[in-house]
Length: 223
Image (cartoon, rainbow, N blue to C red; front, side):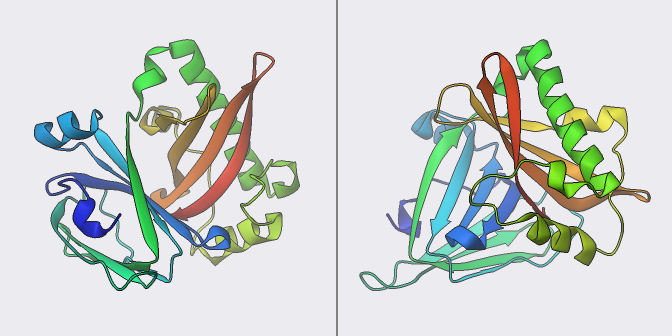
């Protein structure tokens, strides 16, 4: 698959962009897509994954509604590096170089109609953010390939402000995405500082074990 195989992304919002250098992988959540594309992939949003990541450049910015204005890409030679550029409506340009890509349709928030489960997801995030605020990183469960607690601490300390508890209503902005495995979900929530909402987000995977939800921190990164 090459950038030319991507469905139409123009007009959709770049909701999330994250990098896992330990896996040389980048992920983007884009949507909602136009009605034709939604029918094509049978989902309102698209999750794009770039494998064998060599470069990803996205200037920091506070925009929460950066729409895709244009998509450019090159396939490269067989086994070589591909490239992808997204021109965004907030005057930013996302550029990436990678070896291969894949995408699938997703339905952010579709399970949030279950308010009891939704509240449990919020509590998992609240507990994890509370540990970040308290500096008790060792109490946080990490995904096996998410690096170390020291890596997470470094990311937090490099940011020019401190992490704070979000307002209660901020948890309504939580994005929930069912994963391929049964009883497993991916959570995304903006991080707050004492000054207000930041351009950082926290991402976690949550799975159900014996009727309990277990959350594992994936990453803290710039939106």
